Length: 78
Image (tube, rainbow, N blue to C red; front, side, top):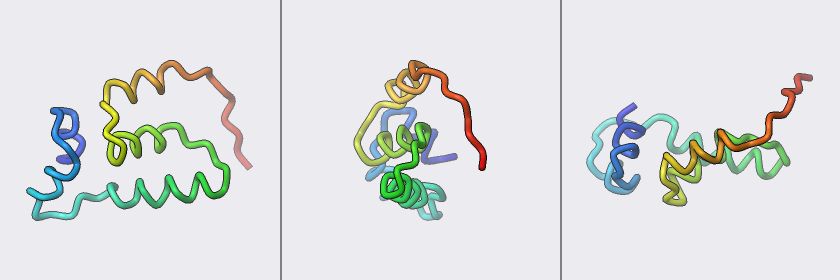
């Protein structure tokens, strides 16, 4: 929660993690899930945008717009 809140206020991930004494759950997980999805050709739009915010400096507002502008697709379950 803290990481997301501070990112939303415009701070960089590097600054946020440098100040924290607790584990920022989800930061490293996002990186791992993003890598696995790409390796296996799985489209994960939310993960892709969270990754872009965390590791590519994308503004959260831009990520939200990208998600909302996507064409709807049916979800497939196996």
